[in-house]
Length: 298
Image (cartoon, rainbow, N blue to C red; front, side, top):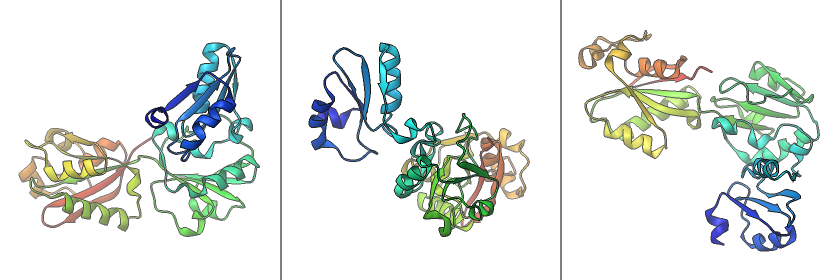
């Protein structure tokens, strides 16, 4: 029981049947179960037995088989059919599936070669390095995707998607958004969080795509920002006033220049960190908070 709960992978050197009997009482779901690999007594075969995709058993099976000169045995449909594994898209880039309730259905469409439409507006473009399967078509706009004859959709975006396509879609959230924050030393976590939620809701962005917070380096870190970043499990990046002063921002402020030594904090820090463009220009929240959001350039 402890081995099953405390390890990312188990490699078992005995029969597949015995392994199944041992682990079956402890199975929970594919998001939390460890990878289980079975190797026969003569090391002729390495079998991916459990958590092939999300748990990484398939990759580990191939790695071990390569080291042993053995035959890897992988039975997951996407791998057998050499097509896109819907539950693994962008995993190496830190993408998160927004809602996994459609993964099984869209995976079945993919394996059965039903028409699949793809729309992407952020994140790494090289998530699929081979030739796309013949049943998969990439569309340049969400409207083209909606009006296509696709049976299922893969949508890679940091934007909120209308409900009319969600029932047949898997939505991936790349860490593509940088939140620039201008604030006072005593700005509270609650104030920052309320301002952030106002921004993402107003501009229809997903908070799941936030990569990091950015701000100006002060003599002391602002406790409210540190607390919110910790709560949301996001890092904070700081820039000196000289660095920010060199960044052209659309909404500079003489007041900010007087107090911070640069005319822009939220916009300039978001632009600098993302090396991209603002998707939310500076939003002001009383008494002393500004927020701007930029999309990371890929």
